[in-house]
Image 1 (cartoon, rainbow, N blue to C red):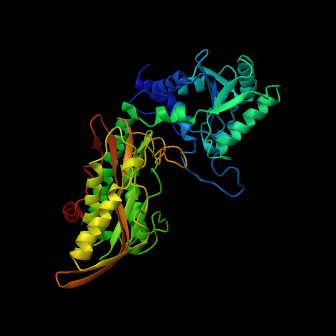
Image 2 (cartoon, rainbow, N blue to C red):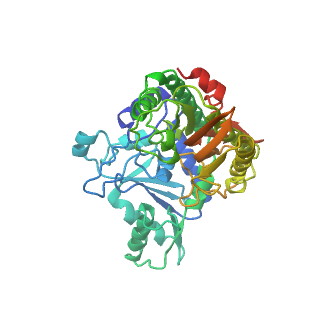
Image 3 (cartoon, rainbow, N blue to C red):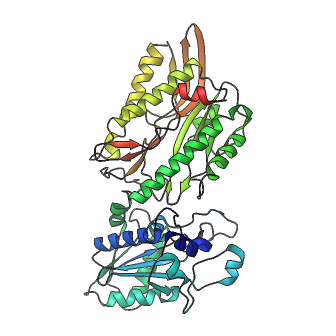
Length: 459
């Protein structure tokens, strides 16, 4: 069956099964499940989201395309609540459990994967051979548990240091279901560490997706730079940037775009986005797009009127140089935690040399030396990695994708060329780095960020 034929099968389900026109997505998801099976020494159940985020509240609607538990999405491509996956290395089982088909819900919300006796739509779309109705989940779990030595064990996907999320709730439900059938001594282990081992390094298909996302982001950013003089406020700038990214992609934004003019950039996750853009201010942009299963995650800081003043230029180039200094240490074999202080130490030294000593200036930061992490992993989630720790102690390997985003936020004074300057600003410059055998490849290197390039492109 050709890719075009496969695309036609998946087309009506594009919202609930994430597939690519560039490669065989079903084969990719199957390879991931097979790799997970090789890591397991007992059966494992991974729960998708039990309901769409916000669905547990009477008044919340997220209206977001991406609603799935990332671990489940990574192994199945299914972006729909109420689905479950069972993997068993004993017989190589890959069993997908889905709700009964609900035509009335489809009338409201579009095509959904659902079980219908004798119908093979779910198999055709997802590539699973064994698809069962959701009400058979616990009987299947108990049947497989009874075949284990006593006391036996199995895996569920949950985070031991993150209680009471939907994954932990599922763990409790699984324990209860087993206990109700006389299997009180049956143990459950977390499959999370096995999963991260496989998920953090990107396959060639996801690397390709990441590169396309970067190209889209580059084109969109350049289009916005050419229209800066016509944009009067943060909202207009944000809407234009979102439009330029989304019209070039098949996916949603990677996250809500941050547009923070002037002192607003001193709030790291500024979301208000409703104030005028002031002549002479800088504006900080944090933005990205999702393409197939990967994201871009970029930050750029630029002058609203197209020209940095001398103090802005000095501070901006301190951050840019800190990024370069940090990248000297990015390579396989080190962890993000090991190298995480390099840019912040550089920035503090540069402020002392260039601002305090060189420009008879002073500064007041909004934090103590380190405002935020300089890197995070990028994958199924824009901030990939184990919740709480962000996997910062994981040793970098080829294929891993990380952000590189030093920043500077506070109030600054300087005397430059006989003039006094004062700024309360935030500056962040963020690129995405793909770890290679000998170091890294900067996927964002073509997206303008030098003072010269920005000033020449802003119109």
